[in-house]
Amino acid sequence: MKTNRELERIVKGFANHRRIEILALLHKEPELSVQEISEKLKSDMKNISAHITKLAIAGLVMKRNDDKSVRQKLTKRGEVILKFVRMLEWYDPSYSSAGRFGNWKINGELWAVYCWC
Image (tube, rainbow, N blue to C red):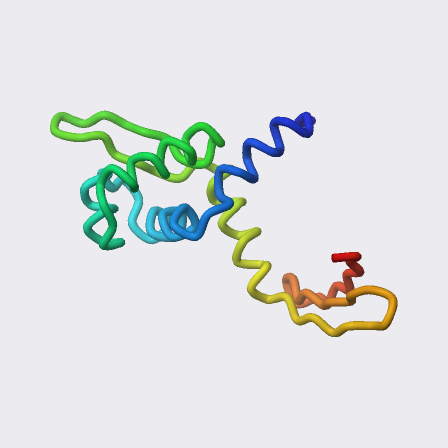
């Protein structure tokens, strides 16, 4: 079981819109270099490299050296995190006076969630 600090590192690893874009891109097109990622996302290579470093520290991306460049690929954890983030898109909030209720449809089943947020 992960400690709270380890979980924090994982969450901070994907807590940025650009990092989520990188995860989604690597899901569609595994084994891309930093240069290829920066070109596809139309972002500065130095910026993309910094984001990939944070993703790697969180264990969401692994790096592989080939003859000419370093290739990035999602780890199993990266795949799971991307699915989790995409689940958040399915959230359909309906509010009560005491707090917030919401529904998620997961694998065809409706889940009710209560949150004090």
